[in-house]
Length: 463
Image (cartoon, rainbow, N blue to C red):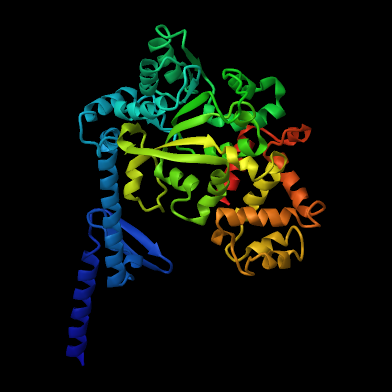
């Protein structure tokens, strides 16, 4: 017993000596986790209890995640270092020709003027694209016509117009830097023909609504007084040219026609515009997608749209941005040159006094939800009117997206001839809508400011 006890005593002493010697470190730090504690040193950090509890799979996932973050940071640093190079070369990477160097030099020269926050405007920087627009314009222009250019930017198209035509030219450049450049470089030599305005030609309808709210700041009157009055209505002596990449411009254009105000009260201009493929698809309904019809269907009724040609987007800067959810198509690498003029024959189908009602009818029909039908939408205005449409060939479950332009017009004829039409809720809603978007009467003063008008436009385009 004594020998066994002595052996055990020696073993315990040796174990205690070894255990105590492990604590003889230069610096000791006690880390406590709940009711448990562990000792770590500054020389080597031991794994924490939380890390020890991780399974092998979780550790591997965490390792991959950390590696992904490091990789993203590395790519981000690389992109930041090359961002200036990518930004300047993006607009010319698809163009291979004699104009490539010229476009690259212009991009470098004017890059500091192209504001990063100016996402809704593109500038023409390619001489060939300017020449093509002027080539088509010369087929239609008369000696007494006035040319209005929207957002000339560095003035590539302006110089071409001054060289190839003898007409008066009005440029609308809201950016002070570009406007000053045009005044210094072009105005001294062409002061008899060239007028430079600081107003934004593409926001004409916003000026119209704001002018009703604040008559003393009527910028629309300031804009329109630069144009000659057109007594022939559809035979216009005003030609508008430029690059448009803002979808709200075409929304404003249809409203201006519907209310017969702004450009379509006395001017009735003909437009020669470069527009991106996505906007061309909206107003031409070329993709057949119902989302585009909110602007496209009224546009097809009110205007003649002629596609003249397509040019590479590389001659314009900055590049047209696409939403991340949009798949890029080959057509997105081109801008489309179109000619837009008012449809003179439209008033043979719809009287001028009914134009506002017709536009509201189209506006609401085009916003019909997928689960609804044409008849359910119309019965919200005049209950139990469905049998009249069924009698004229419309099916019960017909959706407006299934209708042709002639069928939409027929639906309006039937609806407007119903006995209950004059006293229906349709006119109450139409009146409210007209006040919101600038009907020409005193009630429009209830409306607000430029920003709120733009918000209304955004709501309509995003619904």
